[in-house]
Image (cartoon, rainbow, N blue to C red; front, side, top):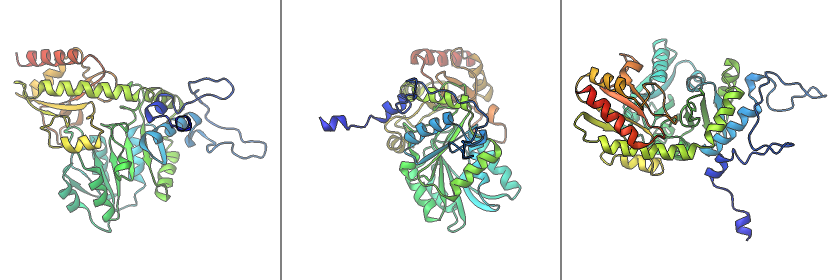
Length: 386
C-alpha cells in the first residue's frame, strides 16, 4: 500500500497535467496568463519573484520552462522568442575568435549565422559531415575548440549522430556539446542523458505542435557562468518568450506524447509505402531498416523515429516542385512538428547557396489519416509525372 501511495506519476502524466497544476484560491486546472510588463516591489522595496520586468520572464513563462525541464531531465531551461534567438544567444556568449565545429549541412538559418560570423572573423568555424564521427574528431582542436554543434537527426537529410560519442569527442578537447534535436522532441530524444551539455529545441515545432507560436528553448544539467551569460544575453536582447506564447506552449505540450506517437506511426507508414516507388529515387527516414542511421536512431529515440522525412523524386527539379504544387492534403509550407502535414521543396526555401539535393522534398508528417496522406502524395506524383 505504501509503495503505491508513494509512486511518482509518469512523465507522460506529469506533462499532460502541466505538472499537476492547480491554481491557489480558485482551484483552476489551467494556468492563467500573466501579461504584465512590470512588477511592483513589496513594502520593503524588494522584488517579489525572480523577475522585476518583462525581459526577466514571467510566471507563465517559468511554468512552461519547468515543464520542458521535466521533459529534458534538465536542471534548468530557458525559453526564447524564437529558435533563432536561442541559438544566437549561445553563439553570442562565445568570446571573439572562439573555435567552433558545426555540421556542413544543418538548419540553414543557424548555418548562415555561423558563416556570417566566420566571414567577419568573429568566430573560427570548421565543418564536418553530419553523423561522421571521424570528421568531427578531425575538425576538433584540443584546447582550442569551445563549442561542438550537433543536429540529430540532421535537417533535411536526417543523418543520425551518436550523441554520446560526439560528447566524448567534445569533452576530450575541452569543448561543450550543443545538440539540436528539434526533429525528435525530448519524449523521444533526451540529449542531456546522452552527454550533451546544452540541449536545444525549436519549441515552435513539436513542443508547441499547433503552428501558432514561435519559440526556442535551451536546457542544461549543469549551470555556471556560461549559463548566466546566456540568460543575460536573453535579458539584454529582450528575447524572453512572452506570456501568451508561453501559455499556448503549455497548452500544446499537454498533448505532446499523443501527437508525436501518431506522427511517428504515420511517417513510418508513408516511408514504407514510398520506399522503392517508381517515381521516388530515395526515401530519407531513419525508421527504415535500410537507412544507415537506423540502429543508432532506434537507441536514441526510444524505438520511435519521429515525424520528419524527405523524399528525393526522380526526374527534374521541376518535377519535385510540381509535386508540392499538386498536393491537396499536404500544405505547401515551411515548418514542422504541427498537427497538419507540410511539404516543401527545400532548395527553394533555403536558397541556392545551401547544400541540398535539388529534387529533395521535406515532409513534416502530422496526425491526419495516413491513407489520406499516402493518397495525396500518390496523386501529386502521378500528376507531376503524367
